Length: 223
Ligand code: AMP
Image 1 (cartoon, helix red, strand yellow):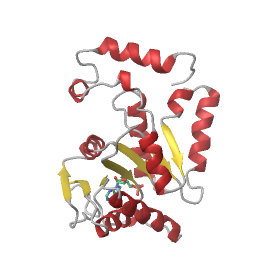
Image 2 (cartoon, helix red, strand yellow):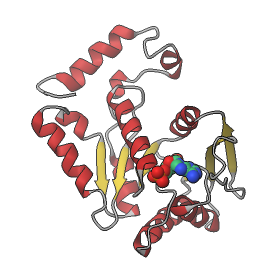
Image 3 (cartoon, rainbow, N blue to C red):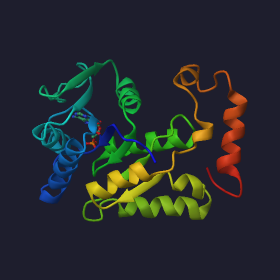
C-alpha cells in the first residue's frame, strides 16, 4: 500500500475540443482535493493543466506549480496556486516535480507529457525512485501506447516486470486506487537522493546492481 499525499500530474498544455478531456482533468483535480491529496504539476494556466489546477483550487485543494523562470515567454504561470516554484531549467523543473511527489498520473497530453511519463518510468526502472505511475485514460487515448509497451515486451526490449511499472486506469477514482494499491517499485533497489546526486552510484553501488538483477532480471528478457 502506497500513501499518496502529493500527486504529480502530467497533462497537456492545450485543451482538445472534445470536452471529455477537460472534464477528466477537472474531475481528477476535484477528487484529489476532496481526498486531501496535494497536486504538483507544470505550473501553467493553459490547457488541461489549467483545468486540473483550477478544479483542485475550487475545492480548496493544495496545488504546487513548478515552472522554469523566464525560459519561455509563452508559458504563463498560474498565480493563484498554493505554491509556485520557479526553477532555472527544464531539467530542474522535472526533478523538482518528481521529488515533491509520491506518485504520478499522466492524463492525455502531447510531447511534454510523453517525455515526462517516459522519463519518470525509466527512472523507476533504474531504481532512482519507487513511486507508482498510472496512465489515466479518456476515450482510449492511451491505447496505442499500451499496445506499444506490450510490443516492447513481446519482442524482448522491455522486461515483463518493468512493463508493470506503468499501470492504466479509466477514471480518477481508479487511477488513485491504482497508485495506492501499487506495490512499491523496486523497493529493495531504491537509491537515495544523496546517491543520485553522486551520479546514481553512492555508497552502496553493489547493493543497487545486485538488487536490481535479483528483483527484475531473473527469467526476464528485455530492459
Ligand atoms: P504537452 O503535453 O506538450 O502539452 O506538455 C505538457 C507537459 O509539459 C506538462 O505536464 C508540463 O509539465 C510541461 N509543459 C509543457 N508546456 C508547458 C506550459 N506551457 N506551461 C507549463 N508546463 C508545460
